[in-house]
Length: 433
Image 1 (spheres, one colour):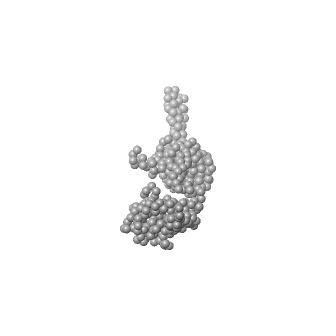
Image 2 (cartoon, helix red, strand yellow):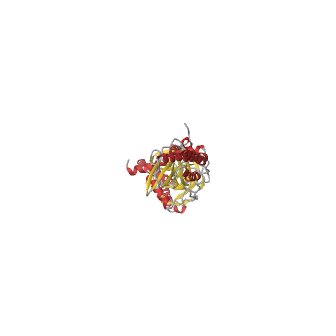
Image 3 (cartoon, helix red, strand yellow):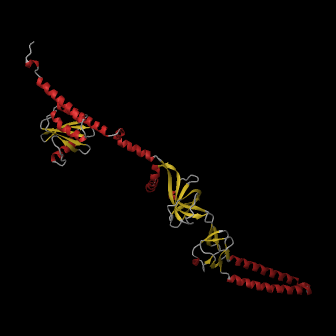
């Protein structure tokens, strides 16, 4: 069979055009792979795709807000221009929704062909003629090439561990759960006082008016040292009276004894005189005991603690009324009033730290040695449990009876329980469950 030029290659021009498009596609893929940034990838996809498809223009919109970052034959993009705004609105209305991430639609005599580029954005083609199935297939292949270029660029820029951040929400949730389950020591803050251990109470032993105080406040005292004196004029007058009566009854007894020698029937008079004298002696001892009670002495060695002496001198006190305390400065403890609303489960010998209001930078550490099961209501304070803590290492520079706050540490609980304990308690009270 004889072949001429036309018979030898009747479709030579089509083959050449197909080969040119294939070479153009391969060149575009190479250019996409060698792009130096994501912006260069977007600009190459918009400008160089015109060799593959007969389009009027192409625009690349960056996810997630569909911001135009590249367009064919355009250097600077104005996202406020009418054409960009119209294209963005069309994409939001007719964006790629099919299973292949592609959409073809028409609006105002212009045909659009959009393709989703993973989570990077969307590539939009515009022209006046409809897009054929073959052209749509070419755009899908081009979109895959652009996506691979973006993914390769992202992998080259990030370290390997950044690949896991694609599941950011799961990592954040796992991190929050892990942090919420971290065990921490539960603690509460309560008012506290640096109090003395077993202070000796000094009170009036009888009712009377304080005449004088022999020691100044916070002065060291010894055992049996005179502390204060009550008015004793009445008692001393009564003692003088009784002493005079004793002298009178003693003389009466002497005369009765002389009379008893002459008259045997007067024996009962002698017994009566002896009894009256004994009664007066008992009265003298009683008044002497009252006189001794007007002079109050220190029951132990220590420091006398009381308020301004001018507040006590001339003041009438009842028997048993507290006037001062005798304490040992080196024997101290932490007295804590834990509100019932803040009561937590405390282990044995729970740790506590006392912070004095006058010196909060010098904490005193101790361990709980006593927990009361009864509540007390203090002045302007809610119902509280009384706790006593033994001091581990004291700070002599902090004075006794110093007010402050103590932080009490309980058992370990999850962090989420520690943070939500109070809100949950408040919610339970408000909601009633």
